[in-house]
Amino acid sequence: MNEQIVARHWLALIAPKAAPAAATSTVLILARIWNSNGAEHSLGNAVLMTALSLAAGAAGMCASIGRAGDPVIAGTAFAASGGLALAGVAGYADGLSLPLLLWVLATTAAYGLAARHWRTDRREHVAQQRHMGERREEHAHIERVEALKAGAQIEVARTGAAYAESLAQALVSRATLPGFDPTALEHANLPQVPAFHRWKEH
Image (cartoon, rainbow, N blue to C red; front, top):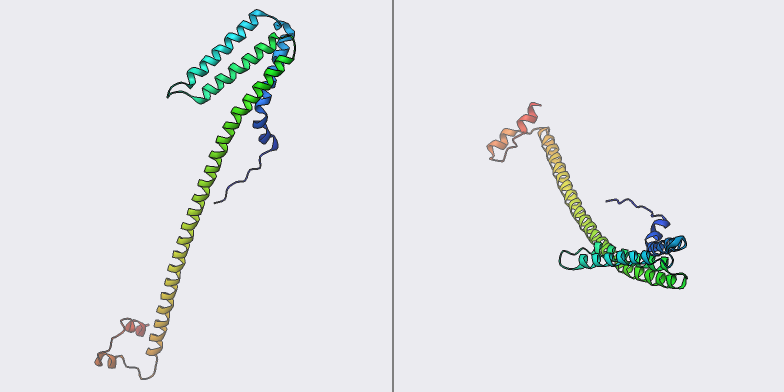
């Protein structure tokens, strides 16, 4: 079984690793743009971002509680809560020190969560590759056994055909010998070849 080999581009390999840093950096840049457009020391904007961040965190808590909890929804809600908190602080603060500190903390937390997800994916990928390898070996073994059986059957059929051909040639040769009398075989109670009369007719 031939499998198509697809060479992944280096950007496709790097993009998942750079996604957490790109996400937090985008939030920081947009928040600083918002800061320069009137969000600095704006109490109303700070209250709005705080309320949105708390709402997203509460949604994440609700999504992660109970048997029906969805880890994907919970993770998305917590990520949104952290992003809104970072955007609120970066938009409200007048300096870069606090926003940069929060950006480092948010990026570190994002990579921590992503590393756990990457380990799980890697384990699942390795387990799937192992399972596929075992199935390939099993199928290859079955194919080898079937090929051996087919070869043995062909050899048996070939041997039987060669024996039948040799027997037919011997019977024809015996029938053409001078002085051969099939009636003498019948009187001697020897086994008679059923096909002899057919060969004699031809």
